[in-house]
Image (cartoon, rainbow, N blue to C red; front, side, top):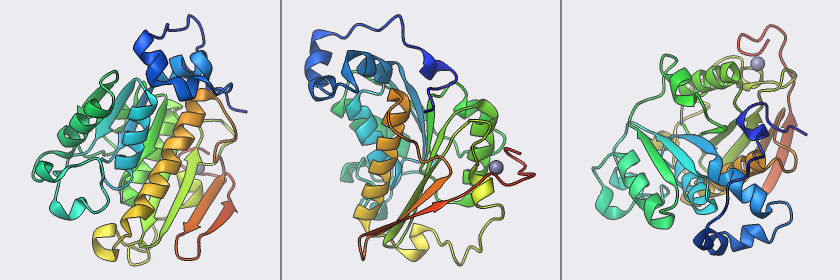
Length: 263
Ligand SMILES: [Zn+2]
């Protein structure tokens, strides 16, 4: 099992939990697999969330509630009334305001004991390296292939695991790009940008709001597992979830020889 190459490998000296933290995280602490040491790891972790939208909302809500110590929210957009049907971190009175500000305020109300950093930028190949630097895990909640590729390349280069999710209509998908030498990456899975007509964005194709909640919550779960060193990550596996027939399919994918990001 992957134990983390960098900061996640750190165990001691363990951070001491405060009295309030013992209460807040009590249901984590009674899990043998988490305990005080696991909670201290969460509190010391830094997670970068790309997009404060349909996926970023449930991801950031659950990671904040779980006590992930530093959340970095990356989004250059403002809250629109059409977002509120699924982007549950934003309240109605936030319409028109920057998404990073709106989300940071909600997260502070859920858990004032964590830090939320706001990056009101669009992720590009030029700034991706700086944005993912120092992260323990990066979560992709973006809605386009250009961002996904830029993020994949930056995370591979930085040796940071990337939890990728995507949505369309009544379906969602999830995979994790691990930094291990033998792990395939997002470009191994999708070497070419798929036809935009086959992969329309939510604005064009529509999305049942709760579907975003399911996939984002799975991304949050995968992120917590990675920080805690629990279970098996979605390495080389793509999960396809269909809400209409409530079915789950898993596709295994391998490293592609000559891949420009991980080959
Ligand atoms: Zn690759």
